[in-house]
Length: 419
Image 1 (cartoon, rainbow, N blue to C red):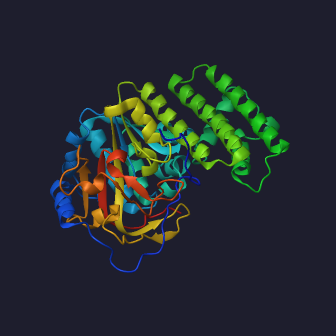
Image 2: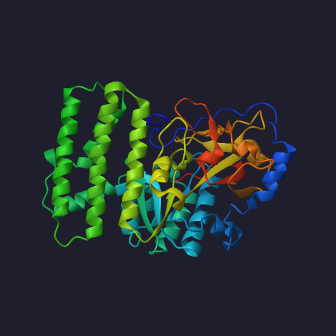
Image 3: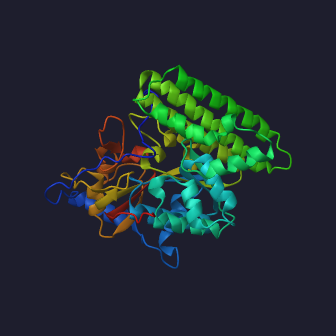
């Protein structure tokens, strides 16, 4: 039994990338290439009038209540485009009516509740994490705006924008709550979170007092929110859940600063994200859910870290299906929007070599239940570079244990970021 620990992300996910290696890399063996091209189902990355090329999903996720859609980096145009099409197919063809993002729970609530009044760009900026503020993701928000039956939420314990702060200000006015020193609690949260994140800020009595006073204010808001008259009960629940997330975030970061144990810190985040997903599943007991986030979080197994997908798999078992998304070559952006060339694989024992061995530009592979001739690379640890995998930077994954299905995209390019 591996220890229950945690992982790292500074805002979302740092990507292990670098300059392209010399040479053209190595291919899979002939047997492996034959297996891959015979069993992988090709489809289009780009938008098209119909979704017929995604029919393979119907059999792959039959009987599943939860589908997790990953990405090997937050900064790839093709990952965004593929996700948009998968979401559309799952919603329109298979009846998945709840979509959860790796973004703040309260921030994405704004997208869900204000979609009719506010433009897509404003919703995107208010709700989703910085690396996802792209033209490709804007298309998904526009899709959401046009489909009120598709409910959306965030499962991250981390704050991802200013949307919730504005909502909280309105609620405080409604319930007659006066912020301490006249300041919005979310402004104070951002300031204290910054101090807790910085090793240059001593974790002294003054910082701890700030944290404890803010937690008291959040608890008071939770109590007052629960007593709001005439409020939508569903809205009250999500506001209360977000405030509880704020408290837990402050507590786990303060705990981390005591010993700087990164594994415990990252495990705490993934555990809380899993709990948020389970909370949504309970709130929508008759609905099927789509979960989108980094491969690290959506994988159902990690040999070294405790990850969200693994916790969810323990809860939902075979009613869950996790899709890992990987690229072969090209250029990605880190979380600061800085372009980085993908490392070219020097060995065929690499997930990128699989993507590059495809005859199609993009394809989906439903994971076989056991090893067959040519599928051996799926059933042992292989290299997974240009992506965050674990805290030891081993860059190794057993794909068959981590995912139920794989999407390979041959060439990756930079997303179109919004200013």
